[in-house]
Image 1: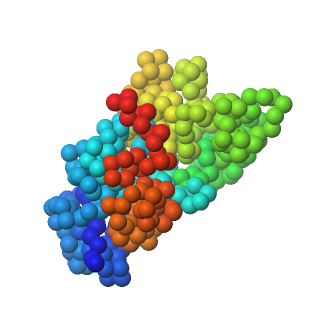
Image 2 (image 1 turned 90 degrees about the vertical axis):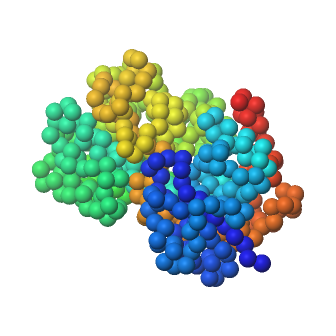
Length: 430
C-alpha cells in the first residue's frame, strides 16, 4: 500500500519561508519507504517548486489527496479539512488563547493533531526543534538592535554596521559580518565595557552563544557579576544564568533544588532583578509558564527607566507578557523591535524612547529558512514513515505509533487525548 503525505504552503505569516521536508529528504522518503510526497505550490518557500519537481516530487495547488499533512506554523481555520491528520507546531499546549479557535476547529472537523513540540523521549526531552536556529537568528537581531540603539543615542559603535539576519543571503554571510565586528572590537575597542547576559543554557541559548563566540568574549559567572568591574572594552563579557541564579526558595533556610523547583515552583521567588543593573543586553532563552517567576517585571522597568543600564532585551523565547513582562507583543522579521514605554505600558516601534528595546520576533528560525529547514527535515524524516503508515481510524488506545510520537497526539479523531484533556478549560473560555 502506498501512503501519501502532503507538505503544505505556509500561509499564516508573510515571512514564513521554512518547509518541514526539503527536496532531498522528500525524495529519500519516496524511494526508500515508498511514501508518496505531494508538495503544495508556494511562491515564497525557501526551496521553490522547481527544486521539488527536479527530483521527481509532485507539486500541486491542492493537498486533497493527502490524508496526512505536514506544516510548520498554525493553519488558518478555513484551510483545515475534515478527518485529516495534521502535523505542525500548534502552540496550543499552554492554552494559548489566540489558537483556541483553531484547536476547536480541529476538534469540530474530527481531525487528528500531532504537535512537533510534544515529540519527546521518556525524559520529556524534545526530539525535533528549531531552537538552535532561533538562537542564531535572535542573537544577530539583538546585536543589530543594540547597534541601532547606540546610534540613536549618538554613540559610535561597531554593531551599527550589522544588518538584520533576514537581510543576509545565508548564515555564513551573517557570521562573517559578526566576525568583522569582532575584529573591530579587538582592534579599536567598544565605547564602554559591554556585558551580555544569557538566561538559559539549552538549544536556544547555545545558538545565541555561537553567534556571540564570533566576538572576543570573556566569561563571568553570575556570582562574580554583582561585584564585577569590567576592565576592558576590547572584549565582550558574557554571563550565563541557570535556574539557581534566577530564583531562590521562599523559605530562607532552604537550599535550591532543581527538581523541586520544576515540580513546586510556588516554593520559589524570583531574584533575577539583582543582576539587571549590571547588564547592557539580556538574551532570554528560557522556557516559561505562568507558574514560574518572571525575569523582568513591568514594575522593575517602571522603577528603573529612564536611566537603566539595560538597553536591549533579546526575547528569543518570546512569551508575550511572560518571563519578560515588558514583551507586550510579538514582532515580525521586517519590524523586529520596539521600545517598551513603562509610563503608558505600550510598545513604540523602533529603537527610540525611554525604555528598553525589546526584540520579540516569534518566528526567528524563518530568518534563516534554508539552513533551518535542512536541519529540521533531517530530523523529521525518520518519524515520517510511522506517521504516514498509522491507521488513524482506530481508537486512540489502539493507535500504533511509537511512544515518542503517541505522546505528541493532542487530538485524535476530534477528541482531546488523555494527556491533553486539561485544554478543555481553555476552550470553554471561547
